[in-house]
Image (cartoon, rainbow, N blue to C red; front, side, top):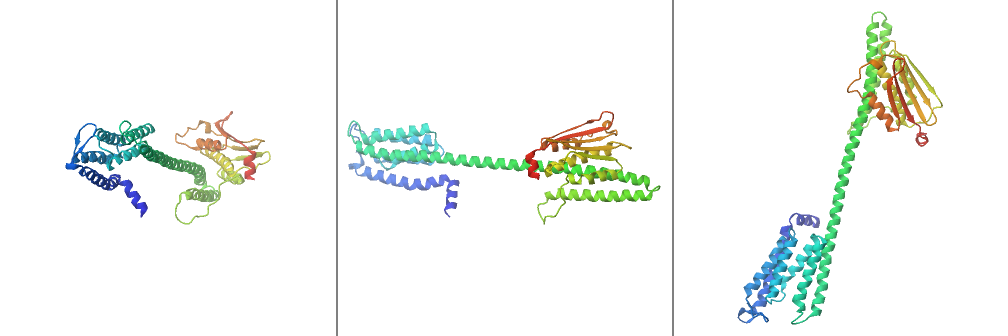
Length: 404
């Protein structure tokens, strides 16, 4: 209940000000009328100037002093200046302090709580000067004790306004930081989603490009052998079936991460170096002779790095299948060194002369994968003919121990 009332008051500040200013104005008018009607014939004479001031003039001062408070939230400096000027004119006419003069303190609090410090100090000095003029009566009737005690009250109100100003600015800074943090968090989420989409697109490219290339080669071989060698054609069709199932399983595994509803499914793990022999055997079954050699003691590499090596070999052999031409051969060499893994995939086909696809992602994907682990990939024509892909991946003892 209190929370809803507080929210409503924040949305309707003008109504709230009018609600508490109305009884204050009524009390001020009543007090001013009571004071002025006590004078004989309704007239009050200023002792040091002989100027006569009637009750309606005093009521006018009260309205000029209180009514501007309705705009103190929007224009605190202007409101304080108007009220201070009206109170100064009241002093000049010899009218003593009345209830409506409390508006000076209210306006001073508004300036202290909403304006810069220099304006708050100026408002506090003006209020203190008004007290000195009204209660000190430095020349005619000194009343230092009254002025000093009221000064403490004015200073307390001024300090409360400064505290409210500091508190408000602190809360605004907290809200600003919270909004900035929320914006940065949303931006990080968008960046993470974009990175995930890029990763999935790269994985899909590797899977689809490799397996579709194998299927096309097998289908072409089956078409040539269907009349002369039916058994070989059946073997090619079985290879097509197995390759298609494998591609479908990998695509389901990758696309499955995009599912947001339903029961999670069990998907096959990511390819690793333990499946390198299966990859080579699959390419050999597609008609491309592949020589696979590993030198040096194998190391315990992280799963992500193993996947990177697997995808680089897969992409390189897929390019040989697509662009190497007939009678081409490929060699895959993995050399474990003390601080890096050297991977070379070389073929003797005509891939170096094949036109580059303008929208291809294969070589770019290789470099991006290797760069994640601080490695490099070079793809260039091989001396003497053919094409060579060379990848260098650093072997970190820390990553190796974590993988172990």
